[in-house]
Amino acid sequence: LGKRLDERGLTDYREVQVEIGVVEKAEGSARVRLGKTEVLVGIKIEIGEPFADVPNKGVLTVNAELVPLASPTFESGPPDENSIELARVVDRGIRESEAIDLEKLCIEPRKKVFIVFVDVYVLNYDGNLIDASALAALAALLNTKMFNYEVKEGEVKIKPGYKPLPIRNYPVAVTFAKINDKLVVDPWLEEEQVMEARITMTFEKDEKICALQKGGNGYFTIQQILEAAQVARQKAAELRKLVVKK
Image 1 (cartoon, rainbow, N blue to C red):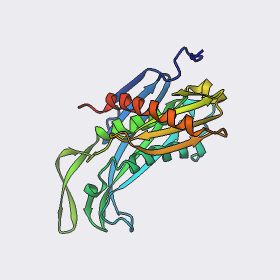
Image 2 (image 1 turned 180 degrees about the vertical axis):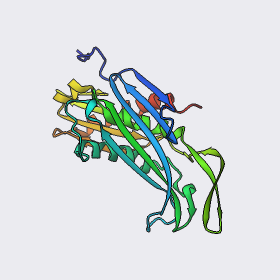
Image 3 (image 1 turned 90 degrees about the vertical axis):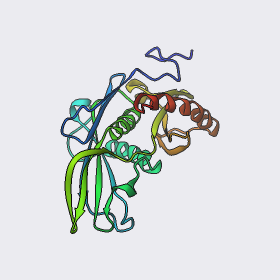
Image 4 (image 1 turned 45 degrees about the vertical axis):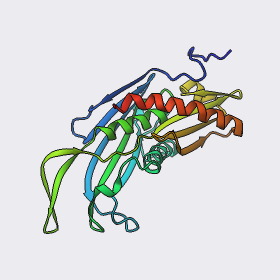
């Protein structure tokens, strides 16, 4: 009792490994292994136009690709609902925690801003893509280098040297699966296949919840959600220490 098929306790994560700077051509990158689940995140920065309703803010865009070699269940082609959900949950954590100071990415209001592309590639799928992807995204953003620039006569001139992306929050996602009315942290593939429901909580650095995502057809009681939040808060802090070096 209290043990899982892979011998973990109910609130134990699989082994987590984080590598940064793994893609030479990207402005920032990180690879996270969560047990056998493996995710790569690359960051690209381009100059473009802001959205009309926020003319003085840079743009964040998150995409996720479930590469067919990562799992027999992934197919090539346009994004399916799983990759769309994965991108959306990672995006929401970064956006709602205001992890990137988007106002500092404005070059010229209404005309030119930096666009930050966060691309998530799933290399091997063995359960719990959300937590691995969110952690890899945070690690990649923290080691992203932006080029220096100056604006002369309305033109952006690139200058030598780099500066870090303006990061001011550290969102971390923690996912639970509900199996036989018990909640388990970091479900692996076999648990995901039998779970009734899953819930993901994303925590900011000050331990506030900034995003919630529910999946599956089952339900969670209020008590289960409150208990999960207590465990998740502690787990988020542990995961954050792996990527945020004081």
